[in-house]
Image (cartoon, rainbow, N blue to C red; front, side, top):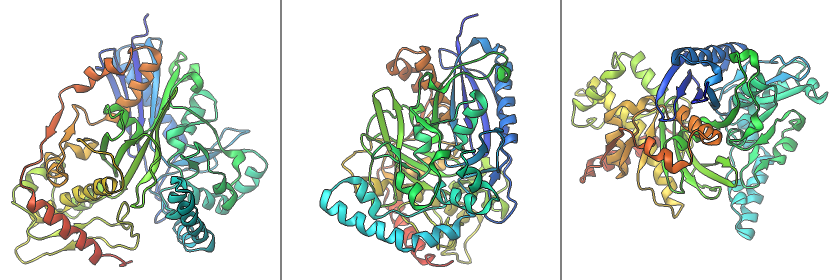
Length: 510
């Protein structure tokens, strides 16, 4: 039987998806399951690693069954994973030593605040500023504004070493293996302890300017580096093959990418200046760059992918409250069904001077204020549900507008359009408003599930399913929808400025 299919797997924050694609890029089978999030204490956000593993296997097998094929028909597998979610496990037993701690977890908040205000980090920022003034090297520019965050792994891993009984002792003995979701999954699938470069680049323990582990992190925070996996490029044969018992037949894994990198690749954003926005659990602006971008406005330098001789980077801005904002609105009975959001927002010409600051856990991005409070401002006796819903949706757009502005203000790149994906990208209102506010065309591909498609493309290219990127460009065109910015956007820009003012009113609240 010929190997005519490629499997793409996306292990997200809330959902696990697996799709089987043929050579035409058509979906021949699929399966999905929900990720169970555990919150044993306020601020804790965990996933049971064995439960996640069992569901991943179930979803992989379900997709194969859905396609009506056998594992022998798969040419290759590509894996996309959520970033900065990690666990540790025993080298001798292979068992996880604690639950996966997700990127949304804030248990290490006291460590983050203590270190950010401590002499070590202040000294690093001071000397980074001096060294950048002397050398003009971007890595020192990045050091001059470095702020530790809960979303990075380093502080949460330090918390684990300090608070999980016996973990540091086991690490000192060399019996602990660290891994993000990509590394944990590869270990379970193949037995190899490795990590892909775009995934490890999002942890805060990797230096994209040097393309290696950031040695100062391990020294400064006393994190044993013997637990870290080997870093490998984004595609190739080095990932290994699945153990026979997983799918019934070994299948090569030939591509792994962090979810945002996979989404960018799947959207056809290959060249410098190509911009991608994901509107999902969180919102992410990713702009492809030729070199790591050292930002003064909260954008993070990441690795997009490393393929053979090609390494592309990304400048990323994040707004983590996107899905939470929508969920909160539903919880407060501002609306009943997600499908009605756009219609409710469009039922009024504007928000009536009402603005919403989506800062349930503070603001991040180009406005970084973790003490900022969330709330509405500008409510009058004439304000109704429609204005409140519109203000909620507009706040999602405004967070992306500020990130686009931040990137353009500090680079020479020109953004020609914004490609969007993610569940919230299904809202026509949000995408049209995004086009109006940014003045850029906004393109929504035929499917908003670009992460799993992107990593399947990369794996298929490696396996010879497709000849080159020019061949898959025709597949990428699909039945996309483009939202054109209206010519007169004075009202939208004025609202954006008022929203920025609203954010200042809610600053330093907590």
